[in-house]
Length: 482
Ligand SMILES: [Zn+2]
Image 1 (cartoon, rainbow, N blue to C red):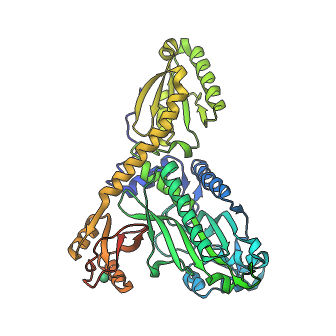
Image 2: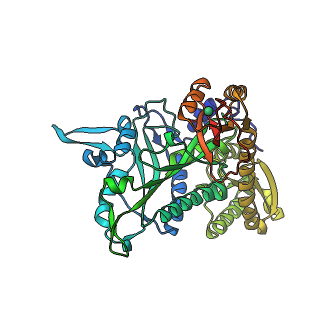
Image 3: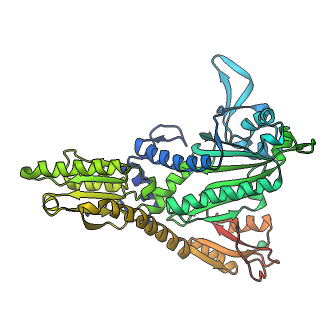
């Protein structure tokens, strides 16, 4: 009964082709909008993104962040206030120069990120240590005039994310906030999304414009490139001095707030779920994030249709009342066509009910991750689904971890580095810490970048830099980013 025709190529052999095809065949996005770097999110993509948004918003709410909405336009005088910030973003912003028949005498920028939109208001809102911490986030889209090649969901000129901006009383509070951000991200990736990652402190030349320290989550893609999906930054007093965000401390003195910001790339997490978990049959979604968690498919024959449909409806009501996101596919399509469609959409568990199953009081469960069928007694369905919820996550996570582990290479010298450049993967090497050396590595390997130092990694003796032979100061990870 299963559909054995594979709708997609092998993603490890030809990732680009696989990725473009899955975006079309799963009806995720449409590229025909006609503006470079801007894509249309179709319902199948939008509902997954909505689940990803909910996952993080719920967690931020729990950690006492509050939601807010700021305008998409930023006045130039705000945008210019922090010198490094404007330097970092100037070539990437979209400008609004004209409205109606008039040239604007004060041009506006479309937010590339919202520090300079939010912080002038923080200066009004924060007066005393009692107003701290101020922890606000917004779920929004931002705009960057990317000049590199764009790729749907991975690199676009408009993308969706959550940006959380916090103001704290002390440096220690700011440090704790960044640890909390890391924990939010690590937990979601590990316990819900099943995606392994590298948490790296970016080198000084790769920090967010205006940050003192930048920590980033990189994930590995099937073509062995890496994608940054989230960052959290210590901003220190860089912005609070520029925007005059001061508070009266317990002892009555005026002080600048200590700031942090945290960006969670929702479009990029969607791209990651598609790419890391998907296979030749389509999407494979972790149970907790799947818009449809269980689909029930009646296997109908003319004379016994009624009893099968009744069983399916009863099962549907039961699972819906248990709180599952469940769909009963009672359309006129053949079962094979339904299997094919729900597999492409990555629904984690499918329940098939045929006349023989009804007779025996059994149902057939199909798990999307391993494509195995399991026959269970009807009364055990919920228990089995709960088991699958955990086991699907485990399988997806272990697959991802295996790929990540297999792609990691120790780079001991220049030859190893060139081998890494040819074969792809993530290199781990002793490094001198010099930007100049990182630039040379990038030029010679055609795009491998020093991504930074792994957070909490213990080092032994360092020796010399694998690239230049000078004294090594740290162990870094090098990889080719999108
Ligand atoms: Zn070096």
